[in-house]
Length: 309
Image 1 (cartoon, one colour):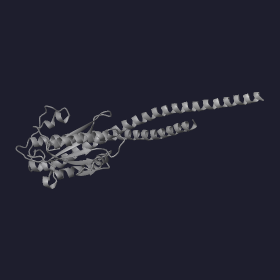
Image 2 (image 1 turned 60 degrees about the vertical axis):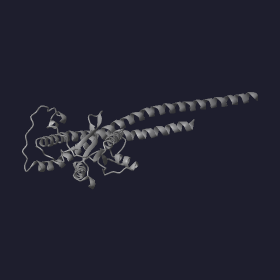
Image 3 (image 1 turned 135 degrees about the horizontal axis):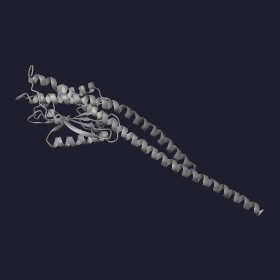
Image 4 (image 1 turned 90 degrees about the vertical axis):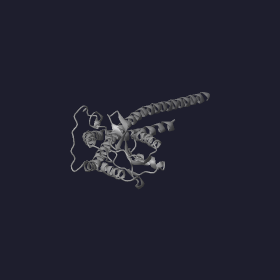
């Protein structure tokens, strides 16, 4: 009985220590999510405006064939950028991204395209390394607080590979798989095709951008020195801004998922401590009852031996 009670008390101390850790991680995630949300709100309008500008400029350039907007006759290799996390304890956050990446990879291969993985975060890197898959490039260490320099490094590599020929390791399409932050409760895994940009007579500038600007008049563009030069200058800016916004959305989603996971772990720890405390009390009561029974039995034995004399 004494050993059982001691074991329960050790388990209670262990769970309480774990609870302190999960509670601290919950508070840290809650404090960082505010800054992450502010960064998303600041970045999203610029990314949307730049996308609208590029789309509108491309739709107003007659008979222009530019890699930014032109579908290649034969798409042989597609780049897939997966935005996962560097750390765990965030529920199914990274697992959902990897699952959607697997679905996209399967779909592209069914279309006869070779897939070139570009990975962000240690979770995606470990997932591919464990399965001994070839990775084109990977970036780690900034999933919780991405900077524009991180997005620029990724964007520059993707734009460089997008401009290469297939025999030199170039890609014909660029897809991004990331988690879009909707609210503290809801985060959605989304897949966007970054390049070539889909342009349908400037509709990218209205309702598809999500700003409720449907029906507005679109500007007409004159290009100096020419449409090719303008779109060449806009291409890296467009890619970098979109990737930066995706990284910020993923960062906010990761922190929200971690806060929920740690709150759930803390609540479970409370329930487990209550259960173990109840079992420990039962064991303690059983130990006391056994001691009383032994004392009474000993007293009865002494009384019986005295009567025999």
